[in-house]
Image 1 (cartoon, rainbow, N blue to C red):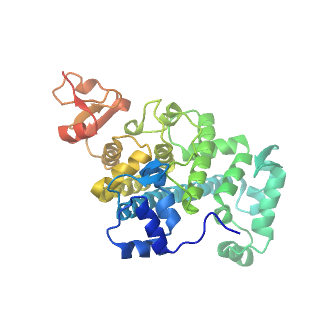
Image 2 (cartoon, helix red, strand yellow):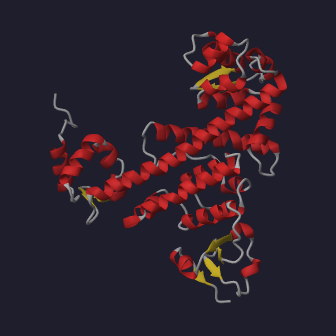
Image 3 (tube, rainbow, N blue to C red):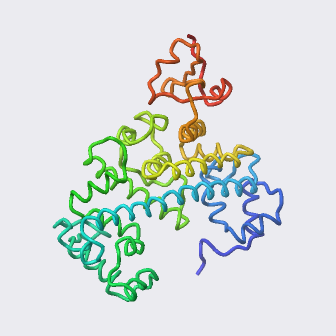
Length: 375
């Protein structure tokens, strides 16, 4: 049988790419990278962004293989920042649930996993309608009654007379702990959501938003962990910008018509990181991405992610706020109208906080697409 995708060695692949007008600065390095990183991750993952046409397949002018590799490296570094934030939130969420359930019902697994504390209802899980009793029993059997390979659980089963929630929940997958939360009674859901989201909004809204944010984070976690395409993925947060804005500091708020799944991901991580030091570290890691902006790699990457054009300024502003820097001596920009105001300007003190961005100087404002106010 003749297959439409036969095996080709790296030299043959380089020849195909050269026919598609991709340039090579160092063929030996390209050979090594294709042998290690792989053709699909380096080439197929980004071709729709760098082809000038798809029929026939041709790369944009003067594009090099080395540029594609550097772009790939930036993509992976950014994904690592996001993954680290998501994993922190997964751990925070498990800890919040264990704290609240342990304080209310006790530290024995039979108490905090009693069917009496869950709703008497069914949800669709893995495409199948599942009742709370069934879900909790299956989870209990899997984590407690079986020969669980988790070292911490084995230790508590063999050396202690109970398995505390903060130990048992460590072995739950992100999906399992999310579904566990969905089945909890309404009051427990509200108490947990109130601990996870500090914004001053109704607790019922917190519960609704928390469920959506966690599912969105979980899906992005799987995309990153399983090496699926991150740029251009179609996972959406199922929340409007006005809803997200109610939980954000003013500097991070966006206009209602703006849409970027990646910006929503960043905002959800910030909302759910429960300690200021964690938010500072997360934002600092995003700021450090600027070291990759040689040859405009980072700006191109952020553009493909549909992040705001002034994203770096927004992150810099928020970083300064987290580090207690005074922004009121800086140039102010109107995010909606893309106009900047000097301190002696008529409207400098009249901009709404949620519509204000801050610049170090006029040049930075102009570079980010803002024009000077006439007054």
